[in-house]
Amino acid sequence: MDIISHGLWGGIAFGRKTKRLFWWSFLIGVAPDLLSFGLYSAANILGLVSGPDWKLGSIDPLAFPIAIYKLYNITHSLVIFALVFGLVWFLRRKPFLPILAWGLHILVDIPTHSTAFFPTPFLWPISNFTVNGVSWGQPIIFFPDIIFLTVVYLLWWRSKRLGKTT
Image (cartoon, rainbow, N blue to C red; front, side, top):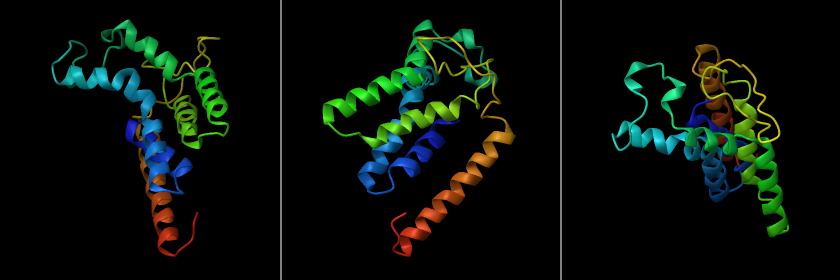
């Protein structure tokens, strides 16, 4: 799934109560992609580091440095997510629900990434198993995602206008 959709799904799922929780959920929802290859890709586009040629359309996965894959493994692992969620819960003595946007990010990525380009290593470091899903860039995934996001946000906006707290 694209990075903005991850943030929007995280925000609507875990941040509806307050603006602060919404933005925490949004940011945590985009963090796995932003922290793994988003910053590197932005630096590459700006010419600050060498890497893939984004104008080609199809990017060779080997154009990314190995460090990007290591960060991707960490940020897209349900095992690491569960450990961090549990640690934060232990330290705060209560769960911080916006962190669930990270888990949602991983769960959505599992079926929407193919093995051809950044498959989701959701069991890392226990296993390197990945699912060969349908790429989120395919119209069959991308357009329904945009439509569902639009409908869900319109319903949320409408409920807020009517004074309901859903």
